[in-house]
Image (tube, rainbow over all chains, first blue to last red; front, side, top):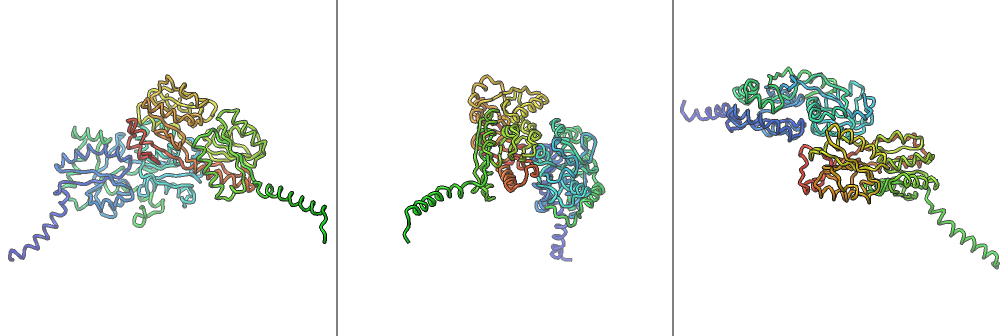
Length: 294
Length: 313
């Protein structure tokens, strides 16, 4: 075979071998964050982890907030992200649509690695169950969240509410769990649904909040925010990222970063973690394939 | 045929009588609505403007006489205003603010009343066969929470009026909450807005809280001036049109005005008030006055700015 005949072969091989390494070669791993809480607080909490991963991997890791839950997958694709910390629904979408690999999720300071969805009201609202909710104002986080929407939808259907638009006086979406809590606290909405972790966090910061709000329904345990990476990221890089995260609890520097991240440690995440989602989706009457979440 | 003088006189007299009586009988309003505001403040004026606009849309305004009274927010003035309308036998009394609504109820009249901007805890006092309306649920704790995010507060000055029951209730709520946050509360009982400077003199407050008191809001310009002079943050339960607090949590007046007009129309159509559901104001505004905050050298945390329904820049 003459050398010039080999050129196309080498070009193809170069593309096949080098293309998946582009992100790493470009010197940056881009990781998205779903806007689960106030974005300023969220970035502040993730910055030490960003720096730690960059240092341990010897390459820049950059976290970026994905503007809206509903846009998470589009943004993930259009911005050619390498991975993202996904919630339950967006995690399922990532696995289902691009076969993303679950890598790790954080264990909370209280030892839990799962979250629940809470449906809550103000104590003085007089609302204690679904029948009291008729004609009231409900606020959700986003259509693309389980803890901030789909669980409530499933709970309402189980209690006979099949047409929320007709049942409630007003339905709104705040875009973040924190804002949903404040909306109910302020009286801007009567009922809210949020992720338990964000609820507990606000209560820890200001215990008077707990005295003002009543949780009237709780979902089953669901996996907390999980890091998923694209499959076309080199296997070696995916493994290293996982190893760095899982090893943090044994590294004094990692322990400090975990403290700032408000986590005990990272544990390995698996596809099976998302099984609980499917029951809620079934009860809510939605299918991942056809559900219009935007 | 000759016309006799007697016939002519009779004819002219008849015409004159018709001309005199006709305009009155033709133009007299079909209905009379008496409106009582708890004090002359922009918030109630905005509410009333929305009410009148909606009455016009319902086609009621043109055939209805609307008489407005803006008594000073004290028991005697409010009670006199209510009695005046009862004596006039108006078709409906509309009351803006809990003190005005409570004054009407205390007269035990059977004239239907539609209230608005009534602070939720006073609803029990207004539950009669003859009343319905729009109440407001506002969270004292939320507003305090936002206020304390601007500055660490040691002494919270609370402006209220012991003649306005809703503001007294809010003052008492604030006192309990402040204790939980380790703050001292300095109550400023402002019964006349002209007394504001004397009442604020010597105050130790490092943050101010204006309850829903109309008197407090009649003195709002001076309270803001005072707060600016001392560079302290201040929050309010009432939306003003010109003088605004750094943080305001209030029910939109226009939304309430619309609802009141709908209820008044039902009453004029013959539906009894006890068949018309009282309802909560649904549009609550959280307004941050970034312009004044910046001029005072205060920064509203970005995490709170994102919660605002409106920003004044």
